[in-house]
Amino acid sequence: AELPTDAELEKARTQLRAAFAYAQDSVTALGALIGSAEIVDSWRRIETYLDRVDAVTAEDVARVAAATFAESRRTVGRFIPTNGTRDA
Image (cartoon, rainbow, N blue to C red):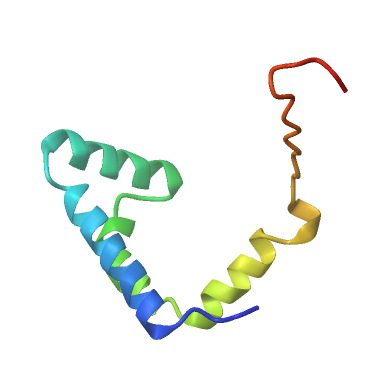
């Protein structure tokens, strides 16, 4: 699998940092963030989130992508247009 470039990794990190900041923009959003973290593990994960984002390497992305998008996990659908008729 092709590794993401440094520019792609930095773009993703920037997007994640922005989303993390916006997730703390209101009391409601912050409550949702804390609740989600608590469901997964602990609200304390929030304290190390950005450090963990920064620690992700191109190799980490490639490894997880290869496991997640494996052919054995694929679902394929086919769209066959009928142009509004029932002729087959």
